[in-house]
Image (cartoon, rainbow, N blue to C red; front, top):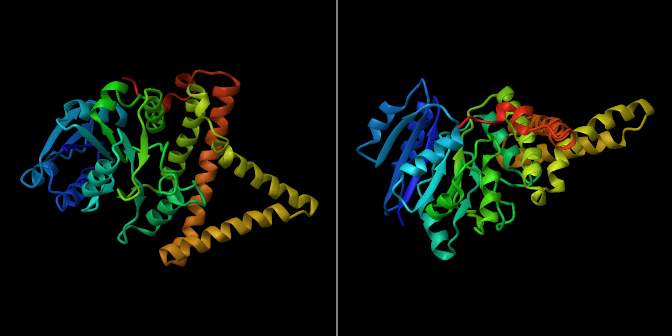
Amino acid sequence: MFFSLIIPVYNRPDEVEELLESLAHTTYKGNFEIILVEDGSTLRCEEVVKMYSHKLTISYYYKENSGPGDSRNFGMRKAKGDYFIIFDSDCIIPAQYLNEVEKALEADYVDCFGGPDAALKSFTDIQKAINFTMTSFLTTGGIRGGSEKIGKFQPRSFNMGLSRKAFESSNGFGNIHPGEDPDLSIRLWELGFETRLFTEAFVYHKRRIDWDKFTIQVSKFGKARPILNSWYPKYSKLTFFFPSIFIIGFFIAVLSLIFANDLLLKLYFLYFLILFLVSTYQNKSLKIGGLSVKAAWKQFYGYGIGFLESYIKVIVLKQKPEKAFPELFFKK
């Protein structure tokens, strides 16, 4: 099988160097190419690509900025392979990754797969804390960490595989961002394709973001979900409301103190204590355990408030998503 690795990048030459360095150490013996798409960057990574051109088969393209989804589509149209693998530029790829993908496809072929993300020991404490909250069953249900159900999985484009047939049938990613990943998964299901989680095909997702950027990111995730629910109502789930319910419940718990009722607040304290202990144990660090509590709160708050705002505008008031949240849509 000939893999084409599709990597969109925007002003991240340092990330690209780490990513290419990791791919240069792959143990995979089969054929693969790398398609790197510079999405209107002012800090280009062309010189980094030249550094690795003698080690890896890389095609480099520069285009005007149109967003990650459109850049992935651009890369897949340029690719020569029969199966595309999509990475974010802030990923580091384990040496055995392509072997695991090929093994899984040969055992039970599927036209679209997703893999989990993990943290390296070299990551900062904040990166490890954010990774924990983004992957833990205690926070997201494990949708990025590998514990979500194997079938009917919605792959995320930091670590995603797509056959040429599935790409050509679906026309790839739409212009919403974030939200382009579940949008593509649902359209593939509607076309009769299957998606699956490959638990062993994980990447190290570095996420170079600070607390403010993380809050903005998860807020956008929350805003995107009601839009997707309005497009595909039969795929809406009650669990999508949980972060908003969590935040509303917390403020009710605080207000309950006026009536000398602290039971609900104690339950929240217990939850965060469990989260702290689990993260501390997994990361072998009290500091990361504490930072994980902070990350979880920002995740719930950002997503929950964003979801509520979008639900009111898009579902209740019937506003057009492109007008309600123009920041979520790239112009094609």
